[in-house]
Image (cartoon, rainbow, N blue to C red; front, top):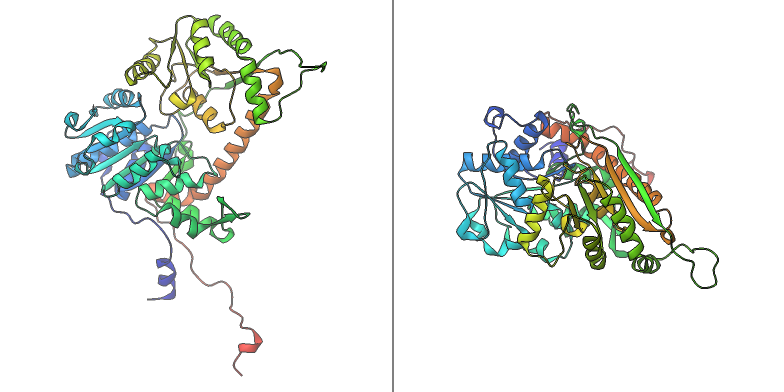
Length: 458
């Protein structure tokens, strides 16, 4: 073995263990980049697709499942968030792919099946040759029960595909949990290999300085990340987004105590108190805004009291709460997608992931919490590729909360900058993987080794 061969063997990468599929066997409705991503995922066998909203993850995952069943005769199960199952069936049917919704083992059929994450324990997992996770960001939690069950119970599944939007650039544990689910590397092993504790805090990790390139090359060996086709070297034609109009609606509050002026909330507790104290004012402002239009509206709230009062004050509205039955949630969300429901009131934690609502271009947040990810995902239900109208996003807040819009725009700018850097770090090797071009790594020696004087041989 040469020294170059030794160094090549030291590279950490996911080893392909899938099947080679010819282009002409795939669905001819796939875009070029979608087709090549599916071929790559099938060749890997176990892979992750981190793709921006509206880039066709549903179509790609269903085609992956179709080819697994067609070529290997292995049954496939897709796990998805509530209400996404019916949407997936409808989307797949447009491309001639049959997907069967099932509630337990007795409902399964040969081919592609789909169910909700909550029903994981209703199935004999070992009978499925392939498992697909739709909105696999459910693996984000480092210690969550669902995350642990998915990793442990699906450990021996031969083919796995995880699909979600591009992860938060600084959420390394989401990547680690995906790697563990795909049997690439355990999350703890990933941390010890590429990371160090940050400032002695065991909860915070940062990449070792010398390991940054190696880490992202390792990620690119089992995952593809892109927010637009050009990230993979393809044409962006047809993937343009209309403007997003972000507006803050500020309701006035009375000054407290002896103060002549309204004092802006500074701490989290003060903001939460301000939110509770101004519910009625914010509900009225929101209802006035929504009731003045005959178009569809998506109304996001965070408190149960907000949800109840919004439903009472907004005409023709449908409310979806956490305590509602699964049937009501699914019927309401699918009804909103079809246009049957004109005004939907719910929380980002309930419907902020998975649903495609390009049919709506008006939404309002009745206040915001500190989770930018929840806000970002909620907006992307409507503001996604396929949307052909400017999207109006209103944020209704009290004056004591200050300039919320400025904070949102700052977080959005930082998020997009970090996301761009993350994708750039994997871009070249990913292009090579997807387009099947060999990316050569140069192991040639460029520096002369210099021995210290005290060990030189005379």
